[in-house]
Length: 140
Image (cartoon, rainbow, N blue to C red):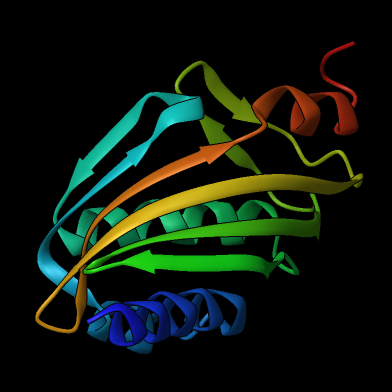
């Protein structure tokens, strides 16, 4: 299962990069669970998770994730990603909307995913929020 899990994880990252939401959905279990640790956001259901993905893509329309490393243990993958993009759209947060800053970001992240029946079942997403906020000029 390890190689299949790696391929599904990479395909979902590529679908996000391409903003190919139909493909992204096809790689996600209907009842998938998403835990975005840095924002304390926990979402259940692929349609709800897709709203979050589109929110990031709206805030950073040219954002692209590069897979730096990926490994698998059975049906679980760990992928290290470098995200690069420009903040040109509104960024929705629990504390309100952050207006576009026009600034570039380059942040590192790690996602741990569980794959079931060829689809992403769970994702824990860890990324460096402080670096992102500093690069956007919103923190020191």
